[in-house]
Length: 159
Length: 159
Image (cartoon, rainbow over all chains, first blue to last red; front, top):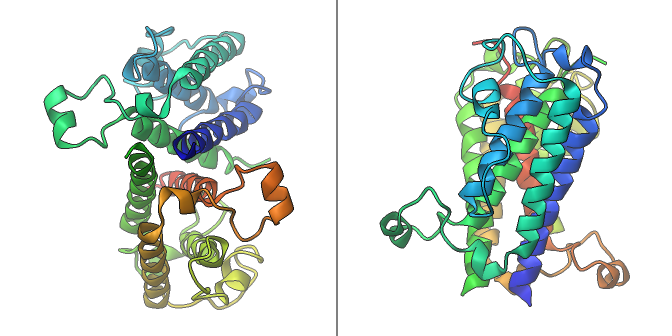
């Protein structure tokens, strides 16, 4: 069925971008995680936690379940980098990153094409009726490009 | 039809990322285009031409028509930044960027969901039979994240 093939392509694109991010962040030491992507810009540890927080928010947004790490918002999303004095250890972020992305992917694989075209949880029925493109599939695509946005930044750190 | 809605979401994601890139690059002066995204890294002019070259290659790749600017490969793709002494003027790159993206978008809008799932031109019939995910839709998704990869880098330039 062609609609399923379209969904598979988008989930594959998500997986590919998660794998790229994982290859960048997961091997880093505590010290390497403190590097900034450019002078005065976000540290790698912040970007890793930021992606984890944004992905964690996708669980309720896509109606896949409750958040696993709501405490990551204050650390990595609603406050800028360096505003919070103590961040979780690398091993803790790694576990949160794996748990969140694993839970999300299992959820993605449970959705049919019709499910993907349903509204996401932060749009009202009324607004969704006006703009049916405010669906779960559009969230998947925009969060996939969001990963790539930050992965591109990490490519600028001198080797 | 749900397959058409899935395609629309992906084309909208492409358009959104093109618009973001356009807002960054199109207003820049010749002098601003010479800024590097980070010390010693690609200049903005190179990234703009690079995106134009990659998008131009999508025309034959997606079987939408011949390339408009094959000469951009040597300037912005097969050679690194600063390898070629003279680059086109900003106004010329702007015109190429608009022409390429306009031609691509018109092509995208002519494709049905079934067309999007056909093989792209750089995979053989035999390889496509083995892996039907090597289709035009996957190319669209990967080139969309590619825009975001470089747009993320431009966000690091000090204001």
